Length: 157
Image 1 (cartoon, rainbow, N blue to C red):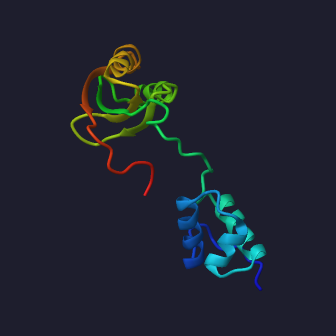
Image 2: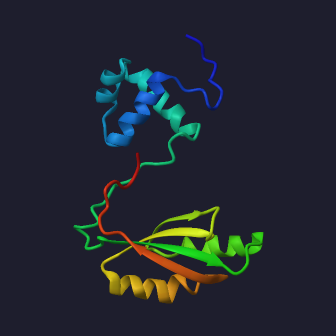
């Protein structure tokens, strides 16, 4: 067997199957994973470690149930900045990462600059987060909100 490490970006069908299995259940055992992909435990473990080392896997985390935690209000804030020079973008990016209610933040090419997914207990708490945290982020000129009535698919593929 060759000990030459594949180039980054080179993954095969077995690697893809390992990734798919982990997306479905990150707690799958190596024994179960190796049986499903058709490898013994050692090669399966080595492939998993390579996928981690090569950056295909960023980490493992628990997926929490927001309804059980009382956080089933989802809103999307469109944010327009007053300045879009690199320093202004960096200041905004750094500050928005610190807001715990922000689940996702994406820079957008379009009529606004950022789309932010915010999860709170209710509309009242969302209004507080918007007014006290989002609107006071560096260079925010305006915001517009859309509230999710129902989440059909979240958290991954």
